[in-house]
Length: 423
Image (cartoon, rainbow, N blue to C red; front, side, top):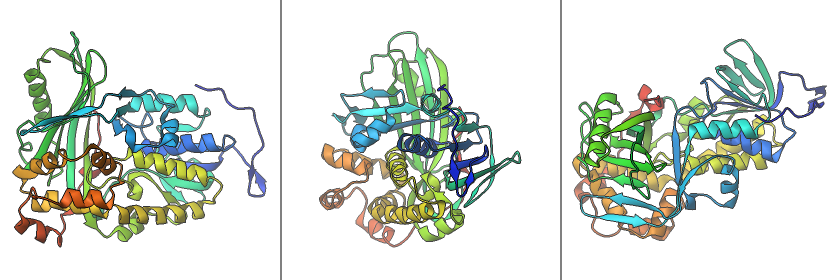
């Protein structure tokens, strides 16, 4: 843990800053909140920042992964504070009809390393774990224990939560970190192994299912069973059994379970975004992270977007709270507009493709050029990319695709929208 900086007098309006007064208070210590705190500290080392998280650690129990092409040099520099696992020779995908190696470098970050990186990088006292936020306003935060934190600017990063104003399906997963007695011999990640049975656990109906495998050490693997389903129910026992079966089928039957995670994430097909903003917002408080709508509609990826937003906040660090809130409200609306194409594809997946045929959508996509795939994940698809994705023989029937353009999936109202719990 870094040493406390020498005592200093900070201006706060026309008064001197007290122990309960901050330049910025960030509610929610997930990926978005943690990166914002780090970017702000790097840009303004003199700022007094409070990152308030109800859980025991920053980042919870999670693993974030991304393609190296998702970030620019500034983004990579921000993440350099954290211990990461990387595969410079790329990754594999596997489908019933083919398998392919793509040379795009791939990266992964565990939440434990995220927490430790922030502890090292931020001044002592910045991280307030085990402290729930009871209420926010434009001038600070009230904590559940009765503490008041006054601030010039407040940023709300407390997660997606309920969103009946938006529509879509669900990405449901269970991941497990296992340790083998012998080296596993896997050289690069398999980010999508769809050469598995295409069904969801009982109670979820049809789904697109795949297994995700990360070789995070010579003896260590992270295996995740994931499916895109209409129903958000997470059957922990069924997913756990499927991971056991997958491990046995690959010769990894004898192993130690080191850890794991579960999650249910929204896949967005549409909705009333302004109504979503109104329901989630507090006057004068900036919304960031998934709470602000900053997600990839189809993949649920957040890391590249969270990095971009953290750097944007750092560049405008001297704005007042209401100014920052207005800036990010507009930024979120721009994000919603520019991700319209990806929501269209999500509608094709959930509303046009029959559940047992959803695998064909991804199988066709991964036959396309590597650069197109990289830009897709980074939300930078060009007009030519979009045309190429839609051109040719469609993986779904035209008679089902056309009606899907004019309808939407069910509202995202389940409590499982915010589920991410330890295995």
